[in-house]
Length: 306
Ligand code: NCD
Image (cartoon, rainbow, N blue to C red):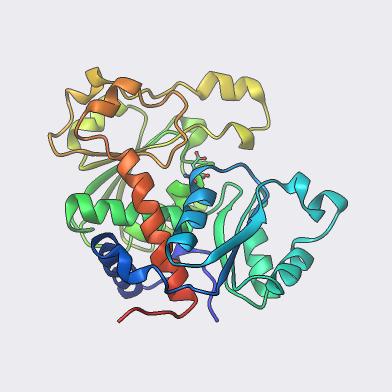
């Protein structure tokens, strides 16, 4: 039995297989509509979510399965002081697979050690978010046809943005990828990402401050929200929140085939006028998230469609 806590647990070949399945689901959705018949997914969300939770639920329904769960810690026994381990053991009695989001880094890992069913990390604090990365990889694959020889700019809150950490871990394994890490000094990518991923991977990366100066070199621009809920001090958040705002003016300097991504929710960092630009991929990305999760649920439940 396998869980998914960190994207690095999947080999490059397994990622390729998941992408192939997701693309087949997009092409032939009917073929998959009963594969999870009789199976249940539990969504245990101790933190707010729209896309991740609802795409997991939609994914399970589209596979013919059922869903149970809670969408806030206050409505679960966590509010009475129950541990994550006990919650995981309990839910293992009711469901075949668990998707868990938690504000504490490592909570889904702890749950996976105690649960008797697979646990999927749906975001743990400012740490990791592997299923967003599968979503992002499917988007990149469909837009660019490859993961190699791409210059990818990650812009905004690279410190607390868990989607950024997981995406860097995944993309660092492909040839010829160049990372342009665009953030204010205070929101630079954590040291562990540099020392445990980028340097050992022999990756080409630069850390810069200006989006305008670098936008012209990018094949992919991954914008992110400043993660207000991870700040200790509201004043710092207010000072940093609007550091980068992508608008149609800045896009004049970008390549014609730039792929603009964002895990969403957006606050201010992409002007609404950008939504009409053909290079805006963030709402397609939302849709791909459902297919990526369908492929992952099937893999972890060891279900195949012939
Ligand atoms: C992201 C998350 O929760 O980390 N959202 C998502 O899952 N699509 C990004 C964010 O909240 O900024």
